[in-house]
Length: 286
Image 1 (cartoon, one colour):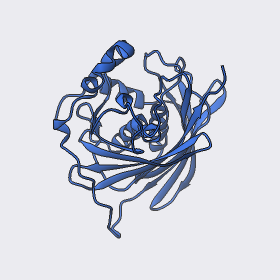
Image 2: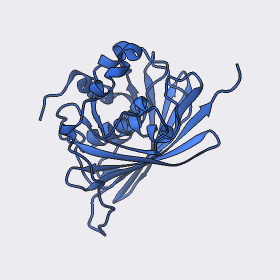
Image 3: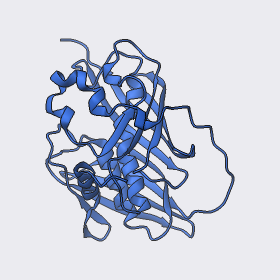
């Protein structure tokens, strides 16, 4: 497995929160020019904060709301509420705070692995990730528009199946598939792998909502943002090995769109399911 890239090393350091008081952690920001904090970063850091207070079990679900845009110029404080410590289930609530106000909240549960029923939907057919172009290669036609953003190192390697959503020239069906993995080897920490998958899940899920519409994120007519994000972790997995990200959007209405996603490992096991609702607003007027 390849050595950890600089971008992935930065993500791992962003997830290594600083404990500043009992149940309170501080997360730093990447040195990037952003208008607001990336939602996947906040969700991943909040999950890490919760996990740092749990003595046994692995994360099995999270339910979160994005409340306000995060300020990328200042750290984020994460306050953890130890809701319940049971024998097999542990529950935590986390509030992310900037400038004295909550910007994000998360409820998450951890579960001791135990035997039970087993079934799943089959993994969709997909070409091997090694046969697909890199993200930079796919977006090369947009170099004049994207500029240095195209060459920015990314912690997650993404290999889209078919044209990248930013390159569509006509409406598409509301789904997309791509392979994702961390860009390098990660330590053997199940919580870290869950946090990296949480970070990566917010990078592509929303795109399924936009597929039927000739709108991109940089369109001045469009305003989009994640509203809530839920995940269920079914089986153990490694975020530094290829995962097929199968996404779809069953509905968009009332300036909101819903997206569902599933992560399969290369052996075909369904390891993570997720649902996200996003703001999908078209600006009107001059």
